[in-house]
Every structure is written in structure tokens, then in C-alpha cells.
Image (cartoon, rainbow over all chains, first blue to last red; front, side, top):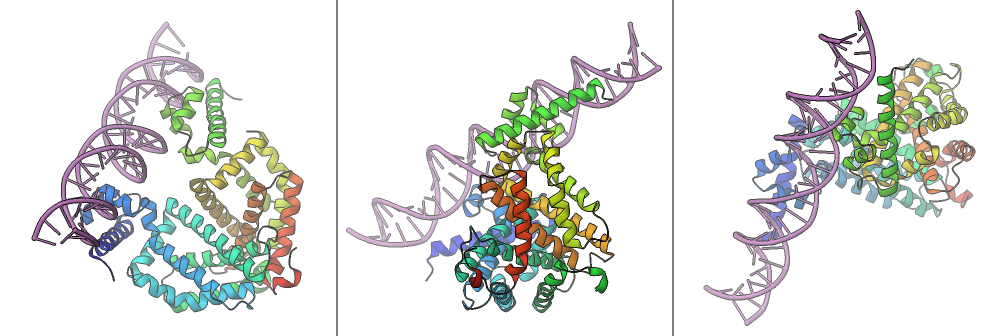
Length: 211
Length: 211
DNA sequence: AGGCTAGTGACAGCCACTGACAGTTGACAA
DNA sequence: TTGTCAACTGTCAGTGGCTGTCACTAGCCT
């Protein structure tokens, strides 16, 4: 049960979020001022900063949700599963649920546009990578606990998530630059990339050139 | 042959760099204002912005040099070497030269302190990761060219550098938090981590727990 | 010696962000 | 229903990073 006050708050917050993303994606992040955002929603600038920590924060509100959902999915994997397999399955099986979570706040289409904007705006890309690093740290601890190893003395948890994170980032870039962004193609692409890590590390590539 | 004008410019630039790093590392990045930096060197604020693109830029001046040196080292590897081996050898063999390059501008000790500051300052860590991502992109293209594959259709170049970058980042963190930061210990640590990537990806870790 | 130009300082201004304080509105009890 | 409290919001003033402008100085060149 939601009180009137809470409803108003949520409306204001979501209005600010939508207006900000719309402006960011159409006219660019740096070209958009806070004043423009609050003008579109008709609140004071001060109010904006009561809902969001800063201009950057609002840009990552949706990402925040997806990352949390993914970490939860990893936590929910059966404990006997091998680490890399747990990461892989959590992503492949949880992808649909993540997309639905996004849709409940903003249209996925807007989210995709925002993703492209992040990728092409240096300041936002930097923030995105830092956030990813933080998520990887969390995941490393989850894996370490699952396997019963010490994350500070055994490098394998961090190495594993670093590799996985690398694959995800490569996928993300592919997602942003290409046309086909259906949930199914993402899943397939990620699975393919994960399979290729082994061959990327060993041997020479000339034997199977032009794949 | 350096003219008087050029000498003065270089002195001003290096003075600003040293003063900035010193202030950043002692009282913190965010706590340091541009005014304090220029006051220490006795130039106007406007002059600072003629030498450095911004407050962030000056913090990464030394890193910029080391990254360029590493990319050059990779380019210099014999072309028959396998990709991961080329990255590995370029790092292990080029590490000493990189340290010397640093020393020619600022004391390595100051550089290490700056590294720690970067790692513990969110805004700087973000910028660092973005810069690393850019370097990785360059390396991926270098590897792709060496192997004669297309970097846009074959994911292996990007996957390989992503894995390598992950190892480097884990090493960096270890470097920052621990005491022993001699050139030799870094080399050994990196080599060890690279060797463990394989076992981090496959099997379960419980068999060799507590390593 | 004198003109040219790179480099500099002083100043005004934009934008993100914050603290302080006062006004307004919803929640809840009397 | 009304009064009170707490939550929420707006206004204002101010800080710090950063940029454009313009006049001035100092090194370079003939």
C-alpha cells in the first residue's frame, strides 16, 4: 500500500528520470543542463539533487537495477556449479528477467539508446567502467564464498570475473554498434564469446583465420 | 636544441605537474583546488588550463607515458610470437624500461603514491579504467594486425586483451595495497597470475583450496 | 632597434553542485 | 475538522572546475 506522499515522490522521480534520459539521448549528455531537465518536469533544480546524487547518477539508474538483478541471479545458482558455469548460466537464463525489469521503468528502446550514449560519451563510459569494476568485485566475493576460498589470497575469483567481465564488455560493444539487439541474439553472442576465450588464449589464430 | 622560451614552458609544466601530484597525494584529489596548485607554482589559473586539459589530465600525465611505452613494446615483439605470449613478454621484459621512463619525470615513489590515490578516488579510478579500455582497444588492433585477422569480425583479439587487462588490473590492485613494490616482485606476480588464468576458468577450485 | 608572436594575467561568465533557511503540503491524532 | 509535526520543496547565495576574451609582456627574428 502506497501513501499519497510516496506516490508523488515516485512520480517526480520517474518524470525526472525519463526527461533526463530523453534529453541525454537526443541532444547529448554534455549538451544537456540540469536546468533543462528540471524545466521539462517543472521542479526546482534543488529538487533534482534531492532525488539524484548528480547528473551522472540519473544516467545509470537503470543500469543499477540490471546489475543488482544479475548479482542476485548468480547468488541463486546451485552451489555445486563450477564458478564460470554459474556466471554463464546466471547470465543466459536471467537475461529475459533482466529485460523485463528494465521495461517496468522505461521502454527498453530508450534504455538501448542510453546505452549507446554512455558508450560514446567519455565521462559516462568512465563511470560505467568503474561501476562494472565494483560489480566484478562483488561477484568475486560471491564466487569465493561459494567455493570456500579467500578472495584476498587466492587470485582465481578475481581472475575469473575479470575474464567474464571482459566477455560482457565485448558483447556490450557489439550490442551498441550493431542492429540486431533482440534478447535472443545477445544470449547467443555471449555464449559464443565465452566458448572462444579458450582458443583466444592459446595457439595462434592464423590457423582459423577469418572466422 | 632547446630555445629559452621552450625551456621556460617545460619548467612551468613540470612544476605544475609536480606540485599537483604532491598535493593530490598528500591532501587528496578532491580536497585540492586548482587555485592551490597554481599558488604553489605562482602562475595564474588560466595558465594551468593552457598546459593541462583539466584537473584530471594532470593526474594521468605519467600513466600516459607508461601506457605508450607498453604499446610500443608489444609492437616491437617478433611477429611469429603467439598473441598472449607477446603481451606477456612485452610486459615482463619491458617493465624495467617503463620504470626508468617514469623516473625521468617524477620520482617513482611519488608515482606509486599517485597510483594509490587514483585507486582510492572514485572519479580518478573511473578515468583510469576508461584510459585502460582505450589502451586495450589499441592493443587489440595491434594483435589483430600481427595475426592478420579482422578485429571487427573476429572477437579473439579483444577477448585476449580483455583477459590480459584483467590480469594487469588484479596485479595493480595488489601493488597498491601491499608493501613490496619492487620491479621484480611485480614481474613475478604478473607471471604467476597469467599462469593461473587457465585454472581459474576450468574445474572447481575446492581441489586446490587456500593457495 | 623595432616588429611579430607565443605566452601570460586579469576578468567575466557558465554550469554542476551544496548549505542554509523558509514556505508548503501530506500524515496523523485529538 | 482542525492543529501539529515531519517531510518535502523552493529560493538564494556561494564554491569550484572550466572557458572565452582581451590587453600586455617577454622572447624571437630581421
